[in-house]
Image (cartoon, one colour):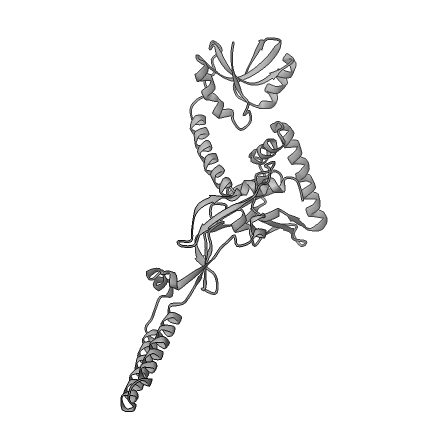
Length: 350
C-alpha cells in the first residue's frame, strides 16, 4: 500500500476534506440515521465519500501528518508526499485503478481519462469514529405486531372455550372469530404511517440491536494515527440501555483528538485574526529557525514567503524571527499563528 494512504485514512476520521496535492481531494458527506431499502433496519448516522479531481491545491494537511509521523520538517515531508503522489499517478495510469485504503478506490475511465470514485462499503463506519460504535436496529413492522397480538388473543379465547360447556363454547368460538376479524380489519384497512407509528411507540419490544462492532476482526480495522503504537482495543457496552457508558477504544481516542483539534483550530483562527506584532525596537522576538550562517538565514526567509521576518545574530547563530513583543509573553502569544509550519518556535531576548 502507498505510504500516504494510511495518512489519508487517519485524516478522514477527523476532517471532511483531505487534499492529495496534484491528484484531487476526498470529500466526506454526512448521513443522518436512516432506514435501509427493506425498511427493516435502521442504520446509525455516518458519512459517505466522494472525490473531486479539481481540488489539487496543497493545503498542507497531508504534509503536516507525514511530518508528525516521521518527525521531519515540513519541507522534507513535502518531498515524501510529492514522490508518493507521483507513484500513485503512475499506478493509476498503468492499472486504471488506485486503492485509497478504507476510503475506497479511484478508477480511471478508459474512454475519457476521467476519474471515478468507488467508496468502500465499510468507509462510513471505519472513518467516522464519533458514530462507529452505534448499533444497527432491526425493526418490526407495526402491522406484524398487531397480527401476532390478534392471534394470541384468539388462542386465549379458544383455550378458554375448551374448558366451558359445549353450548357456551360455540358462543366463545364465534366471539373469537369476530375478534380476529375486527383486529385484522382494523390493521389492514386503517392507513398507518409506519415511520410515525414506530416513532410514537419506540419500545424495546419493537426492535433489537445489531452491534456495529460485534467481532474482533472489525475491531482490529479501527483507524489509528500513523506512527502510533498499536494496543489492545476494548469496548464496553451495557445491554440494559444499549449505550456505551465506558469506552476505551482507538476510535474514541480519535474522536477526542478530533475535538481537541477543532478547539485548537478555533484558537489558531482567533490568534490569526489578531495582527501579529513586528517591531524592530521590541526586546523579545519569536524565533522560527536558528542557522549557522547569514546566507542560510536569507535563503530560509526567501523560501518561507512570510511578510515580516528579521535576522538576529547572537551566540554565533543567525536566528530568523517572525514576530516580536515588548514582553516575553507578548512574543509567545504570536506562536499560534505559526503553529502549523513552525511548531517549535521559541522566544528569544535580543
